[in-house]
Length: 431
Image (cartoon, rainbow, N blue to C red; front, top):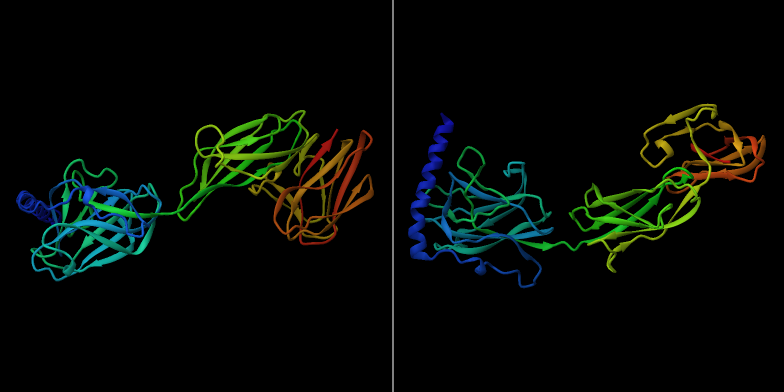
């Protein structure tokens, strides 16, 4: 029963509005065309973004029983600092017009707390329709492609209040007309109001902020990851491609960027198997800002060296690797370990060891601020004292390397001597 009453009120409200429309257009010539919208601020700090400015098909009355608004989708990222609205007074209005900006839900309806609220006093509005600039307090950071909505409300009773010009076809395409006739906000198809939004664009730059390469061994692929960051509050994540130069096994490779977070995207290249390409590779990457070739303004990384080792990798879980003492196991770490796991110990004099056939071996593990001093034994003889300390957390680091051994079976053992942790990731055995 309540729904039926609300619908009757809504229909009546529309019919009165339509009946007034033709007379108003003939007598007042009320709406200025789009070319008469307020221009950018004198300081030139904002730009016209979204707008609907056709000749009016009617007026929507805003009073204590009816609030109106419009959802819209910015085309610019930056600070939305004002709206322009075609308004007029209706009767002896005494209450302010409240203008609020909101985020929207999936239906384009206002949701959450107001992002900005402004008050328009009746003394500033005429009884004939004109465009009025309404500053938003505060200016709101908006993101291109994300929908928002403005609401208009007043406490004045019917017969008083304000009107906003409704737009004729074609209607604004990037958000619905909104009205609340007492039963909550509704998106109304085939309706719209005239409006304009002004945005101070946020200066954004896009840079290739990091390039990393995972150490690999002959016969296994090399994975390269480039991170591209859009600088600027609310900037969308970059799109496009990254080209990698001097990747092992190929002169260059191209990979598509995928969004990984706000304003951030990554491109990953896995090369062909790196047989015959052992050695140190100075690799660079370039973010292509447009087209398929590198432009002078494109962002290019500093060189990063990726080591490709000959030999065979053995994960820390490989059969034959022995652990003495109180070792823990950490899988699925997601930090760049070989096979994404490691063994670790916090106890001095704990050790791990392995018997291998070959001419050398390399030990991989993590270094960090909890690392300490460790002793390395080859064939039962102490060969080195190493450190696993570093200020930054660095997974898959070469902790120790020895080569030139006779081609036979050898043993290696690493003993924790100090520090909070010894973290072991993998071995690379040289044939």
